[in-house]
Length: 170
Image (tube, helix red, strand yellow):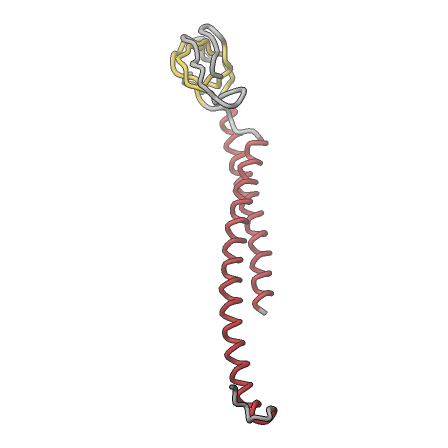
């Protein structure tokens, strides 16, 4: 019966994780669509060269660099933007700007929302499975101790009838 209860809990866990993932996906997608209405792509010109960072990978993580850009109304803005390492001064990098002209992250795409929702659902399932596995191990140990005690009690009752030495152990 314990195994059936835990199996049912595992199935409900998967159902909960899927519903949670769908809800997160929908919320992130709506937020991305709202952000896409407010943000537009632009091009920023670097005011200094992007530093090159030593990395074991062929391309390192983006770095913050001072740059200038124009907003959708032609007003010039200056600030920090992310750029690939090693990019020279005067190079252009694509950015997103909001209504005020400030550099902002790009709107969340459908793929980004799906990735975040999938990771969240996966983490919920992993945490739930680990919890159920620990619960199963504890429950199994408790049931084994209970069963051993019950078997010992039953043996005490039938040992005098079944054994030739009257149930005495040497």
